[in-house]
Image (tube, rainbow, N blue to C red; front, side):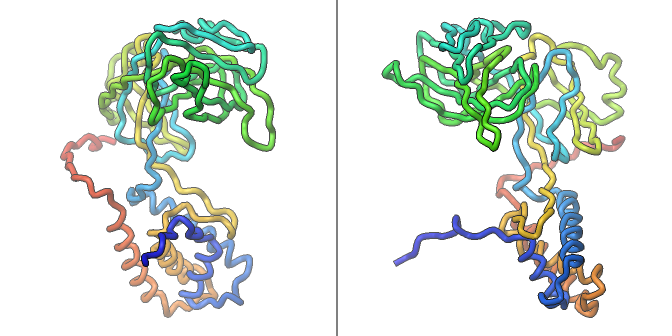
Length: 362
């Protein structure tokens, strides 16, 4: 009889376990581990992570992001923790707007949430209210957009009306901190066709559970997405543009890689025709810093041996307690383990080579 797989039950590798293995490889017994050695090991581990990112190979830290377009704003900030954005497209959506807006007893003007005017808002007077729209025929929502008129921690659900016309079913939950005028776009997978859609506020999960009173400038039930590639510019191309504030829908961008987080300077600058557009990109993120020995590593299991081998070689060089005669052996082990890990960092898709020279004037 074949036993069931237990891969989902594997315990993650902690920083202390990695340090104990790495130090033992470079000749330091566990009884010799001091707080100074552990601290030095954590420092080396956190120096390794950016070096890994410079290789550009860790697929598990490549995430798809939705960046809102804002009218008359050419700068689009990327979230903290992002190293670089690539594979950038501009997405437009069809809007399910031909219906009857409604709210519940929490009040507010429902029409203001669907009128396309950001100067109006549906300001509810009670907590945990609902804002939605009823349609004459079924609508399948693939993307939800909510533009807030308040700055606070929010939690809400997207719900659709069951075929019985009475029951509302939650399909997606959204949490986070918002600011006035901020869009929050959420893609919805597996949504059915329904004659009713709504958002319902709920109490945020966390130590501080405050009731939510919704105040939104706009609710967007989107479907039929259409994406087009937008091309990156190098600095010379962007700097040479005679009119950097020309209005329109985004077709190009320049990426400025600042110290904290990069941002995109887009062209043309989004105008009224683009105020519901989004920029979709794949962003490569930094690995999480390890601050405590009990912390799990922000790496998949396939990298455990390579990370341990590299740390052992680094510590052999950095710690006076280490046996330096092992350095050559540890370096060979590191190269072998890294080669195996790098070779496995793949997605098996066809490879296309672009021989463009766009970065020659970076």
